[in-house]
Length: 192
Image 1 (spheres, rainbow, N blue to C red):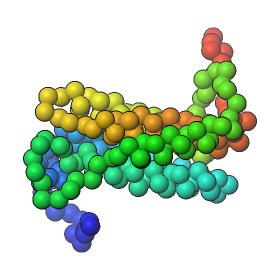
Image 2 (cartoon, rainbow, N blue to C red):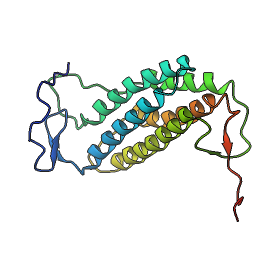
Image 3 (spheres, rainbow, N blue to C red):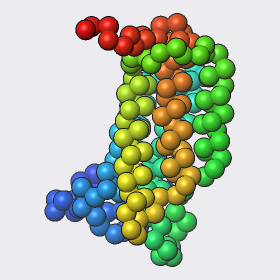
């Protein structure tokens, strides 16, 4: 359990931060960038949820996702380098990926197929979900880059989860746009 009774510690004044394992890394470290961007995604989800009064089912899905995003941050902040830890590190598991897939399928069942790309907008909730989508894609790019570094491990489930999440945000953005009725379609070359 997390217990925070002192918010500032001054331990990061030298430009480093502590991982869950106790190791210190530069704040510009790719792993710190990755879990920081996961946290940024979570903040975007929180903003989107402020606009979902008419969509309690999607709000419930996003509530679960916010909790999962903290799990993902915990996963990334405890690198699996083979060291035996005095605790069981929290990891993203296949059932979390499967649940997001089921949510995508449930929302997508009510949407008509697309004939064009969609511009972010239509409604405030949709625009915020598009922002969450783009930030989660950045988190995914950072996680993939991290997994390419020798000695750095990012689990397959963590990568699958973040990949599915951006798909979820896309489908949810259409769902909150009255199942696509308010979608703003891209018109190639419209303003030439």
